[in-house]
Length: 566
Image (tube, rainbow, N blue to C red):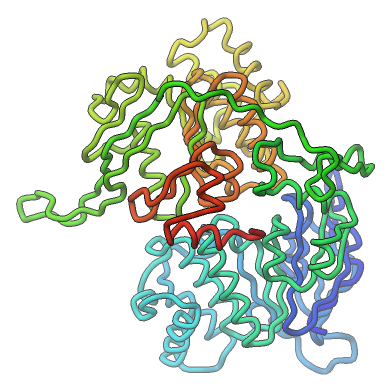
């Protein structure tokens, strides 16, 4: 047995003490993987931090955690009683951890190679030159191209998937008995996600490590785990073999997590949410559950599509790569290259592709944040590609954007009420004496309480902040909403709530959406039509059902094949 956790309880003291993890027990054998699944706040990451001895000072720990011959207390590892060995340092050597956001885990002012070599030299008694060579070997082992060049680069010079590979190398380079991966693929493309999971599984089997894989997605857990532990509000509610839990879930919360994830069968129906399954602490079986469908949910009625709202013709967005001695561009990076499409009023057009395919660049050019190199963008009879900066003031009332990360797009020093009132004042949407009333109406639209007016962004959860971003986008009463990866970082249950909300708002206000995501299952569920983008070009487009079930382009086929659960 590599890891044994018995009756783990983590409490936080203070004015309002609470128990974040309550009586959690599990074991992991050598070469096996345990997936810990649950929403944000369920206690998944705190359980992992307890195993690593990284709990904050305000936390108190009870129970027993045994890693080989070690018993782990809150912030250190100590030998089991009667052991004669000295107190070892387990982090990095006996247990390694891959964090969710690699950019915040890597030092931005140190080269990749220096950070990896440092992790090796701390635990292995070898020379610095041998440490450098071993670091390069590990960069090669995690399948990074040109490892000698990657060694000298800095974190900002790597893609998200490449940074995550570096984190895996740092966690595995000292051959730990236990590897903990905390949401390591949440913000990655489905194809990169599949590559990372395949790589972690390969390295785990090569070194016979035990692994804890933390995620909010049961379908993803099923691709890598032997056993699964489902957590809800700090409690373990289901624990067993992964196949058994997936095929025959016992607890309604587990059924909710499975049902919340968009699937081809749910196209045209409202997504179930956790609240449908759980009520006041009492379990309630939801009759619209995709596992026990009796009867089917009420289908969302699609109205006939009217005239085009947005027409894009031969759009090119190029960035200068090299200039001549006279300062004239001589070569370009073609982020968007000869893209054409039509978006009809009241329609949802999905745009899918990997990072770097040009999706976000295309969306930013449509809202005037990036100038077009060439081409036409016709909106309400006006070519936005040739619109002067002054002319965008009126257009911005009609086209708004919902960003991927709501926290970084909200001003941390402004209350939510002030944030909603600001665009209303700038564009004279309502009289000044009605600003507060209109802000309250917007909060009500996105199902947030009136008390949110006086709070700041950091006082809300990720799902609530995304609702605030939607409310701010709706403040100007736009015709077109560009949703740029607006649900990709959310728990599957929160994601379902936001998708249902966007559908409701579309029906109520006749909104038109350009919905951008790297998750083809979400795009298929939410969209009427889908475009697939690769290397700056649209490689396939058509009805959402047709693109998912009968893809024609090889790139689209790879995206579909990489979708968990499909």
